[in-house]
Image (cartoon, rainbow over all chains, first blue to last red; front, side, top):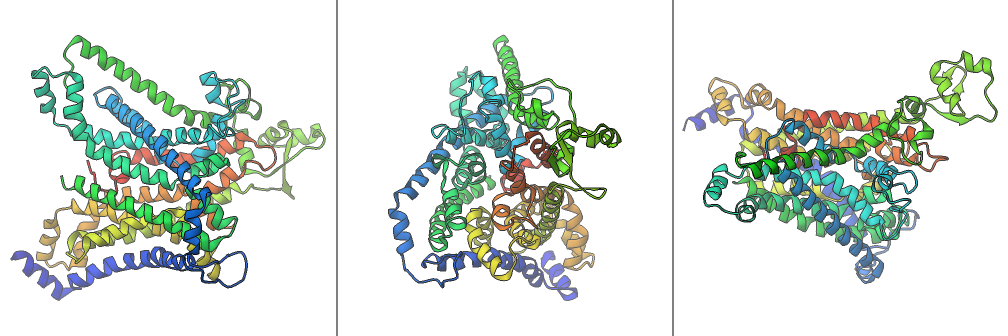
Length: 296
Length: 318
């Protein structure tokens, strides 16, 4: 009751709570609608036309032709399969390396905080700049990677069979720390008494790991997995900077070329929508799990 | 982890710590390599085999900031002697610094760096101030469809940049806003706004409502309570959110690549574009990369307590 009276008294003196709520929330919603949703409606319209932004001819309505052609184009399917391969290799690597390092880190030792922060540095950096300096590392003749691994003049980025893996390795270097950070949060939340109980019962290491550690860390690992899958699906910067190989042409790069180099504006809007629907579906799953963890 | 008890557990512990240190060194080696390249001479930067130990120099930074041309004939000794030390370093490399009259011609790097600063700072200020207000609104007041609105806000963050860039490019072109600072500031504000709302909501949810209610009883208006009670309590959160937004805008590449080419170009598309313009001088590129990464490295340490919160949009707090 006290709350109610104070609220109404405050309302009598200044703006009402309702006014303040609307004043605080509506500008943000409007901003996002004007600069994100409106452009998307605009491009939805173009996706049904043969519009080319490089010429001044007006757009002609072509119905679903762009979508039909895209889905029948085996080159686009190849871009999707390159993207799928990239997602599996890169996210798989990040999960294994990230969770593995987290297991090692989950113990007390000197300078633990410093070491953890240093390990997190790569994920805070610009993808474009990371891609650039990994080119230096991958150089076949004077790059440090070939020298350190004793690979002679092994070709990484100019080798069509290797380039996608080379980019995935860079992505793993950048984002395994992300998985590590989430795993560490999960591991430190496992109640100590569960381990003690397991020790009293003389449970084996493997049993303790699969029955106690893994189930309790799983929700956070799942969040990391979904988020990284979405990001890897959208990937553009690294692959674009590091290689021009057709074998590394992920879907975002195809879309960029179609829109800004070939100027097939209408068609690229259609492809953008295909991508958008996939991303929104993953976002939906992500937010569902995020809210589930939050409620704990 | 369980307290170290048995001998085998002690050995395992030692092995794990050693492995952690080895992994840390491997993880940091790419960063060491780009940093050390920035302080190498051009000859040893691309030597075969790679040079690990060397005496550092800063010629690369002089190159980074100046415009130079190849010398066609050796420089005259009097000219060389009269030149300041930094110009001599350039002569040593068989180049000379371009000048108009007496003033040194600067390269494009300082300008791109400045663009990055202007755009990242402006968009951060906008995104954080709007985000804080909106987060307070969602945190303290009930609203129909609140969860759907929050989902809508977050989903705008997940849009692939290329997908948004195509219509935005057409719209900007129609109103003459391609290659402008304001154009990128708007895009980055939109991109960071959702993040800022979610993160700030997490921080504001943690401030007890009783503080404001006490203030309201004491005769504050709701607005006064927000500015005098809530905002000071949320300062840490606001600072952390601002640093995150700054880093995102500072690092962004795809929008900058598609929306700018000269006037408003930021550092991320500029630095890689230097490759292939004549003979690539990796020391100058490494110097540019080093200066660009430095603020991010410092901020990462400043943010270390909030990184988990940041990468999960405020959902996981501890």
